Image 1 (spheres, rainbow, N blue to C red):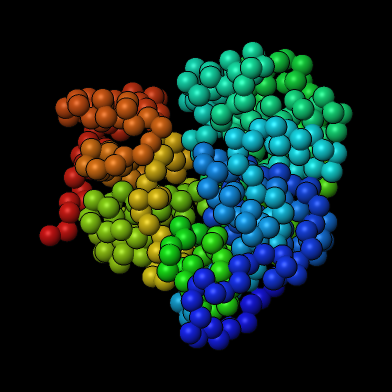
Image 2 (tube, helix red, strand yellow):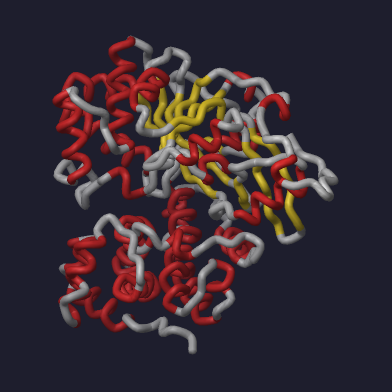
Length: 475
């Protein structure tokens, strides 16, 4: 539903009505989707697609937060409603999204289990970040990770609630099995290659470590859908909240700002049904890998490169970094390497339209009205580089080329890890220890945290070492 511009001249925020279903006059659809990872991207993407489906009245979402209850508390005050602000170069448009019907603190594991075990629930969607899957270099769940081990102890004892998204999901799936509620689909919407398989390995690995019979039930009853998701969604600011008040004539404590562009490609089965997401442009394919790689390498890879190089150069947003010729040249060079490994047989018959996609990315990244902060993108680099830089580096070297542009992304991350005042990463302690070493051994030790096999390649270590310091602060 679009919102017309409203004249609220002279009114204070306190005198404006609060957005809720009385104001919006929107009926609540029944909960049939449970989401883990309530945040801005989920609301601009999966919630928006669901609200645009022709059968939206049949598909409500119960969304659970990750680490903090804040987002759920704020959204619950508005009956799950929020304003989506589409921010284009030419101006903003506003629409109320009503597909989220319940916003819940992720720590409420009992409510999660109740909803997942309900027969009406057909889908669980995930935006829990790449690092949350705790997948090791062998592609399997790392059961030695402290939070995974802690959840396994809690599950085994029955004395407490799991603390990780995976642990909570497995707990809820056990409740569904006990209730005899039948099959459902788990849809991974995180930026991981073959993310359905990653989610399967993580969930099945945790289930197997806890209860072999549950693991067998998951294998037989839970489908894991792979997706490629795309919509730039920066953090909401106080200025964004004020813009909604001025334009719409109501108070919204949880608006979301996003670019107009959106894309969703899905591959997998939905044994208990799904919304008609294709009404909003979602695409369903048999083989998703080419689309995943296009997005992971060209969009996400460029984002990571800009995040590290841009901050080293003193920039704070994607648009600022892209306007720096040194950063732009690095991005274009990386795209050249990625494109060489996306075309032809690698595309699997899919028409990926790489030149048009690259041109669109340049336009999207240059949208200065979308303040996409580099510090936000830079988080969890040790996980992200495994999907964004390493595949391109390895593919280039397998073809007898250097892979220097992909290696430059890794070198920029290493430089950033040593220079940043705040370094957010699941392996931050290990990276800091490796950074205490000197020369090639330092590079080898940091590389080993991302890909041990690559770290053992002396030629790659030499290549990355030679690229350190490429992005000095712009005087």
